[in-house]
Image 1 (cartoon, rainbow, N blue to C red):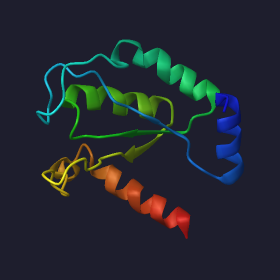
Image 2: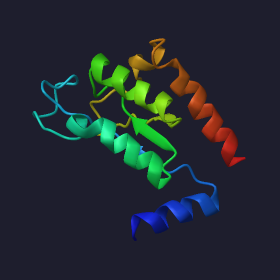
Image 3: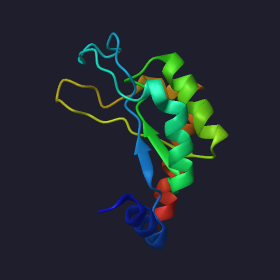
Length: 122
């Protein structure tokens, strides 16, 4: 599906189309990722494009990235008026279901955003 059609469909059905931020990995915060380059080198330009194209949100995982990455990402979300959604996931039975980062004041708003998403579904 072409991107413009996806944006149109999301708008028609009242969905919040989100970009899933990965962030570059230098040394894995969780210890289970190899070093890899993703979007940090062009993140400012990416946000400009996402806003221009009609994307309304960003989902990210506080447990996956560094505080510096999260601070930069949150700043861009606020600058461009993007909804922030916690994208924490569980990939193995050894992984905890508890995300301690959500207790950090920097990420507390993600809990509120989750409740707002639940309310949208009603």
